Image (cartoon, rainbow, N blue to C red; front, side):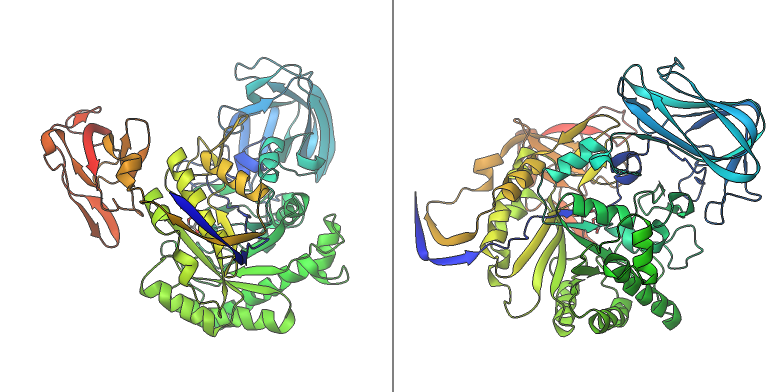
Length: 605
Ligand code: AHR
């Protein structure tokens, strides 16, 4: 094989190509990057967040009842009222709170009453691992904030925060942070996770989603709201919590101020995405009322003021009050996440025109819906060209084979229209094989630096005990982090980016996928009823394909021993399904249960 390089034909690689997409999915914020150790600190959990959730979820309590009369404030409606001798023990996330010996922990809570509250750190057995601290409460009528510091005397990963009261007292916003947060920020971020993210040397940080941007109601009084940045700023005890699209309660303690600050701390350009009033993720309400639309357009303009405005403006003043008088230097904004339904085409111009008029220097990023091909995609792109946006956000989650086969995707893209922002992509599965296919694909993005400006792998974070979506780039529990192979690829490319790609040709017989990964594998069917989620892995662990709701089998044929066909793969409603069940399946779960089937197959193409 030989490679011919043309030293006279060079394309500049975008100097902002490698960035990050952060979404509050998989408990990425609460129980993740946000360093708060107490789960359900404001007692706002309820069944609307998740079946079985209630005001005392994550708390073991005696002598305590939830109350709503005369609360801490209107946005923090629930608190607890504790009788003399009551105890409250919070168990955090995963197996509990992770404490490190000799580290300090900052406790705070709001209280109303007259009592002494004894606070201590314990392990899961209740054994104290800190000297108890007694906090005198002397505010019979007024909610007052109390603070104390606790030093752990031993390490544990099953930690608890325990409070005992001597008198009747109301309590809310019971919070515990490690003193050592990333860059020592107050209300800060978990240091180990933030450092891993920082190490990726990202050029931008796209946030806060994803589907959470625009799913739920656009009504500010709803319990299940689309993401409104205004809910997430100001004092933490005045932030509304929300039901998350991914099925849990969001405290919004990690909110827009913290995202902007984090972007600044890691040297990344902030790139917020706001809803345009429709969704690509399921069927949520849409904004059709002109007054409601105006309100959301104004909220978007206010966001730009919050980020960049003078401290004499209303929202610039709030930024300053939160500790950042200097502007955050917002230069780009994303309008819509995977929004492609008819109402999107009605709503989008209102946002775009208002921003262009008030802030002509801000770059606008539109989106191309959920498909990466077909009528929806073409319509979106045509509309984005008409709207003269600066870039279009494309999303795709495909098999490793797709990434290998589509290295040339952008070679033929129109150079005269909007540029491309690959806002979300991942090769399905967290294997070395998918990471390699991503690496290969990134060479195609670099080669097309004249039209592909930015790209971000998705999702970034997942807590192993609260998985909504996989694969993910960084996995973690309450005290450990694991970098996926995809993380290593991102790290390699982002930290060693070239300036230019020289045109080259390769003279060699191309490898067929089966040369690389074919052979006997194990198939597992893990979902009862629909038989999706099939996965075929070769003996060396390489995933030959995964059949899930998005990828399909990509042309692989599955045969059992003796070459007997073991199923057909077909597309139904745009999704692939396994339609036949093998007779000789070795069920690990019993004949009547179609879950967890594993059997030997040969996968060929
Ligand atoms: O990254 C996970 C989800 O995939 C995002 O929320 C959404 O934008 C996409 O469909």
